[in-house]
Image 1 (tube, rainbow, N blue to C red):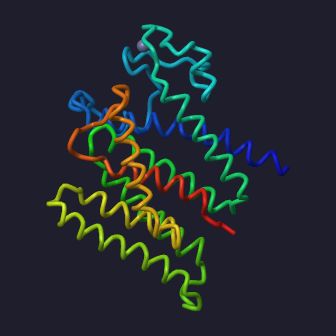
Image 2 (spheres, rainbow, N blue to C red):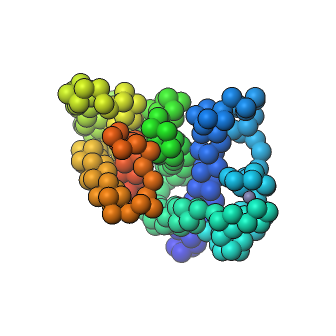
Image 3 (cartoon, protein in one colour):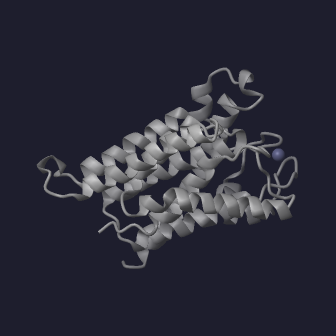
Length: 265
Ligand SMILES: [Zn+2]
């Protein structure tokens, strides 16, 4: 039993990641890509349909859909047009499995696990869209703000209305202090930072709580610096812009890593 739950969570997160990535790709195609005007019924396109090859849009076969292993079963190529499939699919599915495994080992309450699953989907949409087009869908940020407040008021502090514990106050303070500082940073940077990043830091602050939320922006900045240093030495790494940094990508990734350190109790 002690082994079963983490393994089940690992497999679940690998499958869930695969779904979230397809969702993020369809959101990009329907709303942000140069081809967006050709997608007539956007919501049906985003929510329905099967996974397809990015090059020739042939449907992916059942064995190709198996997380991580599917990539090797189809030998890393589309079965129709034989174009190579990106390594990011098996790599990120494997990372998602490690994420699920770690959450499984922490023995989260069912409500916390469901919340973590929803948050993962929203954050992956933020990361994928910000990385592709330097934009963060407002709906994803709104979703994160709502899940953040639901997590605080219904799951973590269900008796918040008694005002007996200082912890909720600390969680809110840390989130709002970063929110205010990011507003200032946005002004100081000459509005190079988007309003979406400012809102994102508030939502992630609600979700992460103190003390981890204190470290989130600094940790995200370190990830961003690391990424751009790596990129300087590798032409293989894509960056959407040479001058603008998709900070939402690093805030999202930083959140996912720090959330593994959280004490869920
Ligand atoms: Zn193809």
